[in-house]
Image (cartoon, rainbow, N blue to C red; front, side, top):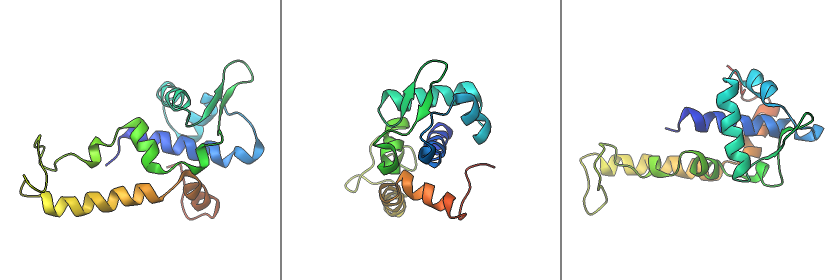
Amino acid sequence: MISKTCGYAIRGMVLLSLEQNQEKKIGIQEIAEELSVPQHFMGKILQDLAKRGLIGSVKGPHGGFYCNNRTAGLQLIDVIEAVDGLGILKKCFLGRDECSASNPCPMHDDFDGCRTAIFKTFASKTISDLVASVNLGESVLMG
């Protein structure tokens, strides 16, 4: 449903949030290794998130990425919109250019309910919700 890039972005933000209590900046090498993600790819993703203000970053030998005052409260839908855009949640299931209630494809009514449920899930979960799940041992980031 979401791109690999978006999944990496969310996982990276959760990892940074897990480390937030230590108030430290984390280097890209450590993040990439911890999440088993190619370093160069993860670096581009996190730089883009920092440019958009979803996380913070500091350049230099003591620099790295960190949570800013927005990160923990971000809804997953905000991250998806920043990385993938919301088109994936609006596109026609059968790939038609125009698909709506007034001009539906054969799958429109069935898929519309699923799409709405997925959107609501992404809109109701925050980065801090995922952090809590990891901290409670209910879920994991790696693997």
